[in-house]
Amino acid sequence: MKEITRINHVGLRVSDLSITRDFYEKLGFKFIVGPVGPEPVAIMEHASGVNINFILNASKGQLVNMLMDIPEKYTGYTHVALEVTDMQSTQAYLESINYEVTEGPIVTPDGASFIFIRDPDKNVIEFHKPA
Image (cartoon, rainbow, N blue to C red; front, top):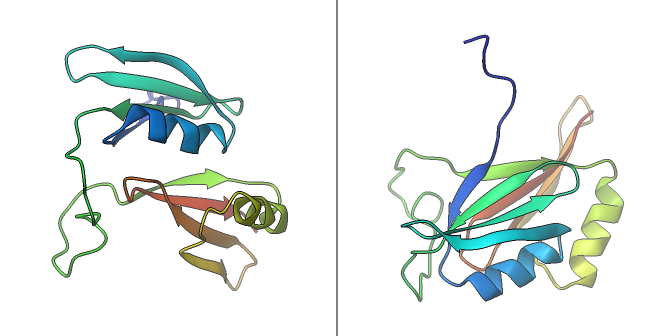
């Protein structure tokens, strides 16, 4: 469809808005509004234009990500990838705020690199530096 111009937002189900908000604020996201609507939803946005809608109805005490952490491979979105300009400074910053890098850095033959972290609800976030 030629009418599609970009991704408008990503929706992530989370269990606690205050914990989620604190986590994503440390990544540079600003709180916009929420909770609103019947689900309910809270919205945060990064200065780069990346917008995340947090759906605030996840069960408390979730220990695994059903799409990533069990042997059965269910369909669904597995992660969000945020493009960065400098992988070394990104990783250093994440480590300085005690956000564990769960995988990587991985470097592809063409020179792209990426690392992964998990948010408090085990949602996977990739930081991607193109070649």
